[in-house]
Length: 379
Image 1: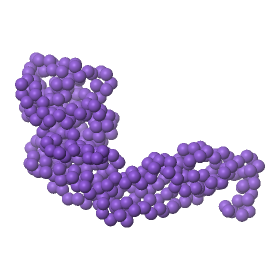
Image 2: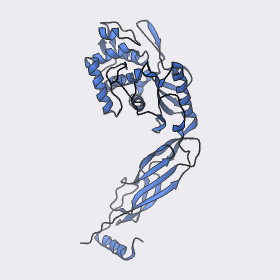
Image 3: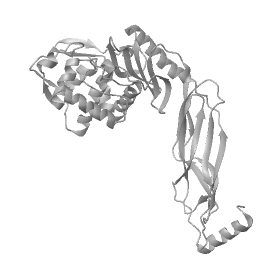
Image 4: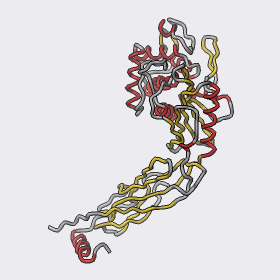
């Protein structure tokens, strides 16, 4: 029996396009741990020790908040539910919302106490109300972190209180921030509140970027002697959202000015380039043993990149697939990849799919095609 299978050869096609090269990671910063991320295009603009575990201080309260938001989404918790304040929560030092022992406080108030006032006491009330003990809640935080893809995070408490086994990376904080923004758009609005009054005590939000015309709408500051001054911040300008996490700075003033400088740089010196649309034709490829000899190759998803304004000649796009493509082919089948490469840019891979269905030839047609190939080659 004649074997009609064909051993395809790899086809690599180089395309040249002209957006800017990536130089973002070369920008200097005094912060020991930094990540600047364009959430609109999922592009890392600045990366300095972003995967290194570090003491996150109160930035780890974002995980406590995520645990609450997740339960509100599932319906197992309601904003009007109330939790009892234990003596342990009431006595906790550091930043406080000033809950009173043996009083019951609503989840809504506790969330504002955590997000706006950075209350350690509020965190413990939440932790004990959900899991019985803060230790059990911290274990649940660590499990949830693994579940949602935070690879360099571990929690021993709900507050960010210093502990050598309590840590996060800047990248994990950025990932968690993105989830809070994208998964809980209505609840996320709590992060933009500039002040909150509880028990007659008014406190301002510690996020310094909320107090000017900067476009910032969250998230959380952090400070301990061990961690230094840190900030997870998000800002939106002209529909474009950037996320910044910095940590290890020496003063609150340095934290504020460096965060503003890096975000300003990101918005000013980088541009979003929509390079290719989903379904846009790349080229027509040869088909083996199909009723049609050619099939259009198209982008399986859009390609949008954030790049700097400088030097617009380094970016290269490479198409790779095996040719000819054997029939039968279904519309949408992935047959190759587009590789996007540039200086300081991690290689981006975009799936290449076929635009139409191609049926296989009948037995006679396949025999004829194979015979012609043996006689004349692939002409």
